[in-house]
Length: 231
Image (cartoon, rainbow, N blue to C red):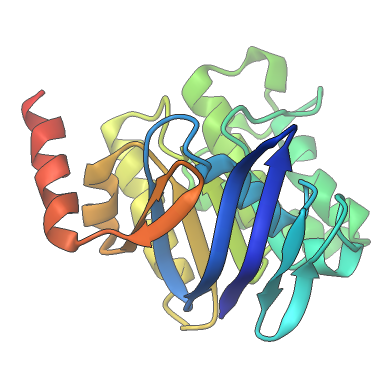
């Protein structure tokens, strides 16, 4: 269970995020809302990468973040975040995906196996030796997702995960995320403008508006998805 209690993020004299009390169970949850609503800030708060004016973010009762960023390493290593504008280190795709495992001192043989598995699942194993500077926008997005997935964390945070992906790749990602939560122990939280994505994932949906988060009825999500398809 990913829990928020009295969480506040302040920038200048403005509160950009306030979550009084929220519990997200294992499974898939989607954050919906306009630009600037606070979706990305909420993901950063879970990842321990933004200062909290107050409150706590916890996982199964253990505090992940309750103060100044970056949060303690032990908490941050229980999460993985795909940024909306992902940064990839210079070098090969394989090296970029492997770097997080190296920092965690995972043995070399296990690193190679885990990297190969995630590249295959995302259908990008053919890119393993390609330089990250030579990737297309969609390829960069999938490599960044591989970086997050390979860490095999309890909480996976995704900001606009399907941007720049073709339809086939979107379905690959959807299938992968559904399988990730099948064991009933992991939390996957996505921020997206794509209402249709939420319906395809059969995810719980939360509307973020002016830094506040409230449940969004499934009927409204389906209605927004239909509008997107007709546009």
